[in-house]
Image 1: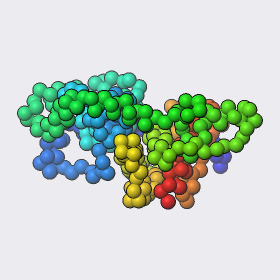
Image 2: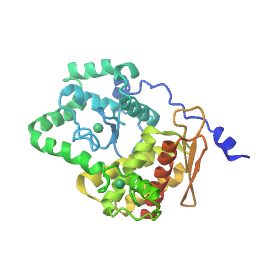
Image 3: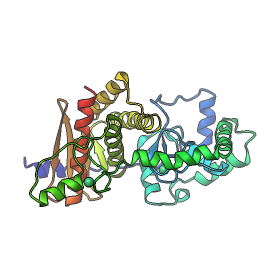
Image 4: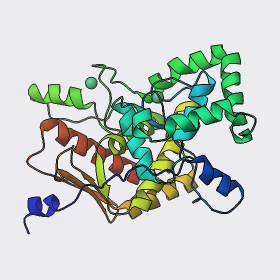
Length: 314
Ligand SMILES: [Zn+2]
Ligand SMILES: [Zn+2]
């Protein structure tokens, strides 16, 4: 069958209506051990200010530098976390809603009530104490928080030294500079001279950004969830501590990529426009003709970074 037709058959993953599973009733049942939540690799939070996935909600966000500064924002961080939402689809939907500046009170049916309940009934809700404490600490350590607020986004957003545009590709020259060179008849593609930690930051940042913004479906949703949680954990350590992942984490990451196998993107349309497939540890990209130049760059950058990370995690 014609490849375009095959790709068109892929349906968009439907993000189901947000369930009420951040409900406090459910949490009480949990505390009584009547229900058990699925065990996850780490906790992730969609940043309430910029929507990007981060590992800690109470230190400045790796991408926008913002952090909760009062009890209301502390309660919001908790309610939006992967502890509050069982389904990864819901976390993805929240992330996209924040990026689109959608009103969370409208998106999450009982969001405001839950938050108000936490804030007015603090004595009964001991489980939130650590969160309020963390906000107090942030206020007490304002100077150090403010330094990180500036430092982290600079470290996570790596720019080309030559033209100043954001680097999209972990392991080769700046895309913008390559285009300019091509216009001048120079087709040589040198590497970008980044340190390994920086290459990893570019690759992981791009991978997460692709999933947050453009991913419409995968072959294995469990694999996708794993890869997001592990990638958020990794990028956090890369930016905050300059720390490359160890062997075990690299293995986990690669296994979750193998499991996820195929990524689809629709770019908001009704049919898939691109497919990125992991086949025998090789990345294969299919880009439909209907893709715009920008969409093609998005797909190819994602594929390039996956190849780089596969090579690094071998
Ligand atoms: Zn942020
Ligand atoms: Zn450049």
